[in-house]
Image (cartoon, rainbow, N blue to C red; front, side):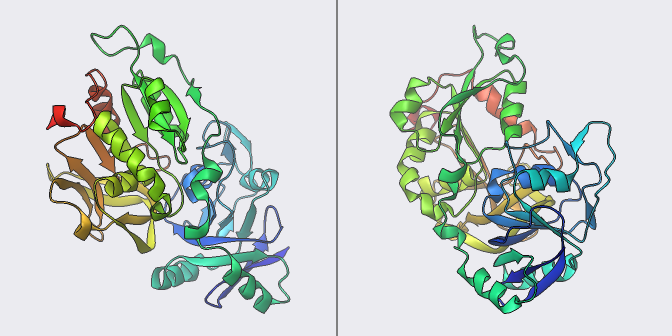
Length: 378
């Protein structure tokens, strides 16, 4: 049926509904990845957002049972120029329209996504409202302007696990760090963790226990981790100020891998502040340079916020930069065993050029965690 997407700036984009048709709203962002629509839509970092795909057509290879980044779509809905309703792939379990409809997420096709993307590039991420009630576009615009801003949405608490669990893919207990009599234990703080982060850790022989975002430092210590992962996640990092003391103690005490939102929280814990990007980085083709080596990698990214370089303390160094706009993409601290990156080394979707960061983190886990204050690694 006919449907539309109204933006808070008054623009209307019309098309046809191809999944759930209930009216709903969210923050509209665009993603430039050519493949990986399933991973994008199930990435918890997209909670509360409407994803505009710049690829000409999506849905061609259907949906695969083992390729999701969480149990269900986390994005509010998908907007595309064209959607494939008769996909073909030997391992697919259902079509994209069936998948979205089954989980109560909307799909809008037939949209001029090029024009919509240009609007978002010029004006930044905008609140939007999807509806099949196309006869009253002014009402749809009014509803778009009433959609809560992401800074006012309890995003992380909406996607984090409620109870701790051990990630069980494979049999990591059979693979151990040389010289160790057991698998290294990794505690992953779930701010909206992608499952491929957990898979990459398990593939390197780690026993991965996933903990809720509200875990205390005492509860973390009971898990006896050899290292900690601060995961990706949705929303405005400034709304998570209460987590900063916890993150500061984590990075002082344990070898730490921080990704995306986790990286932003690390930046705040080290004394920096975050800023909101105009339209963010959402795609699988962002060039990032390692400041130490000069090497350039193409990376997968999904975020609307970054660390303000003017607020980074003198004892903290920038480890990576985005070559498109110069934004901070990684942090280093000589006092700590810390890998902190804004991009997604686990990709899904995207290139795997930075996958070795998981190897670097795994190498840290065979050593005794540092004491609070990080002085043993100064």
